[in-house]
Amino acid sequence: MPTIEQNQAVWNEASNKEWQDRGDAWSTAWGGVHSQWFGTILTRIHAFIPTETILEIAAGFGRWTQFLRHYTSRLIVVDLAEQCIEACRRRFHDCTGISCHVNDGKSLEMVPEDSISFVFSFDSLVHADADVIEAYLNQLANKLTRNGVGFIHHSNLGSYTTGTPKALPPGFKNPHWRSQNVSARLFEEYCERAGLQCIAQEVINWGGDILNDCFSVFTTRDSKWSRPNRIFENRRFMDEANRLSQLANLYSLE
Image (cartoon, rainbow, N blue to C red; front, top):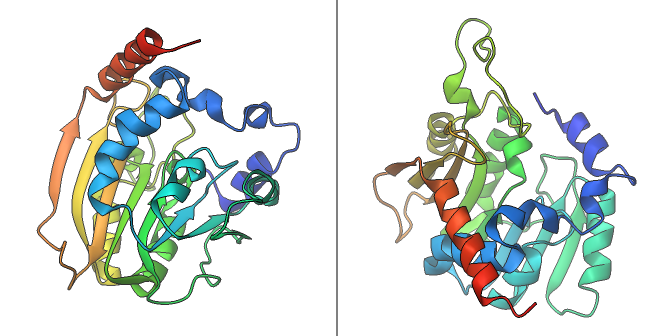
């Protein structure tokens, strides 16, 4: 399973070819970064932005930071890889209201309490194990404002593990390096323990047929957004990506 040390080693590797285009290649299936943002991400978070202060966890080289900065007056960017934060500082050096911080993979000590109105992480914490997810949620319970909301993309591969200790069934593949001990249900439990309320979970088939990922939306218990959790198994998520790719190609000026 991807430990903090493994994540630091991979994403801090200077020769990592994934950073040659600032990570944009990961949006190829959607027809590009802009198509994925406006077609897949923004449609899911538009109810919560623009807002006063946004926290982005595991920002990489700023693939989504470039969009988020237009929806807030203050954007706090956190990543465990120093080279990622240095890349974001260079990329957004002339942008006001953005602060970038290297953390240890779990800590949000640089974030003031009761200050975050929206926390966001996409296509990064899928590689984080349960201890990381739990640590972040425990801290976010104090970092979010009363009506603050979170949107976190995480692994659901843990829902397929069996046995003691839990492991994936023989022959079960994990080509996208997802955490094997995180699931939608566990994320909801961590929210409850932290004093948060999970209000929506979309379980998806990222890059294949199994429901290996989840988008979880959560808020504080006394938030105006608070409600019983709504869960949707979206087994056609990649159909959405394919459609957006076709539209991006149709309307591209290149």
